[in-house]
Length: 279
Ligand SMILES: CC(=O)SCCNC(=O)CCNC(=O)[C@H](O)C(C)(C)COP(=O)(O)OP(=O)(O)OC[C@H]1O[C@@H](n2cnc3c(N)ncnc32)[C@H](O)[C@@H]1OP(=O)(O)O
Ligand SMILES: O=C(O)CCC(=O)C(=O)O
Image (cartoon, rainbow, N blue to C red):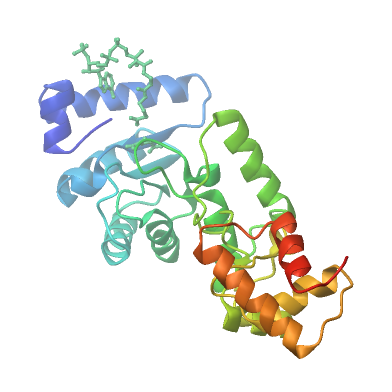
């Protein structure tokens, strides 16, 4: 139920005590029917704390199994989330969940901040899909808890990429190339200095190896490429070149990309022909 003053006015247009009673009746109904009842205060992060605590206490007294803090407009930040959860936890024993939207890009950070203060459940969605800017992304939460906070939730991370692709395919919601964890560019490298280091040790420019989520690294040739990237490409084709040919290939790759041409396998073959290398 939307419990900020704004939601009461715009959506229900009834006094707070009447609306609270509707919520309690719903909780009673659920409990009378043997259900697990999670009571969510929508727009909780724009509801004055005493009003929020009051309704959560009532929900607890009516036997709610979990209370939800819904950051309906994604407007809270991690520090405020910590403050909010800490103060609710002082007064409420019931399990606390967070439902965070991503309007300012904080959904996962806010969820983690809440977990730090004792929240125990998080609403997530694959690829972060959801109303407007979406909700906390499952894959971002799993991987950041595992790798940045050493908290393994026990998920098989190696199926994350496949799951993300499946959800995108069936929901028909494309994944942005730069989407954290599962975006197409996340393990894609072009800049010469990066590629040189990646070839020696991928962790120089990757926080974790792509196989961990079931995907692969891509090294692409473009206007930022240097010799290492071209050598890497030639190695995959089993082609050896001398230093002069290598320099010629690197500058042709840059020129072609500058002209707007993607360096596909065919384009790379054309470049090799120009420097008299046969495949
Ligand atoms: C927490 C969340 O917000 S999750 C996302 C919300 N979920 C959904 O919207 C589920 C999908 N929605 C639907 O299928 C439809 O909106 C229905 C069946 C729920 C309602 O359909 P309709 O009766 O046509 O109403 P409509 O879609 O216009 O919604 C407005 C009505 O919902 C009421 N409403 C809003 N919040 C609540 C609530 N928490 N409890 C009860 N009624 C509510 C409004 O007061 C308004 O009632 P009114 O028409 O008497 O003024
Ligand atoms: O708390 C929930 O589970 C749902 C709340 C919600 O969808 C919202 O307020 O954005």
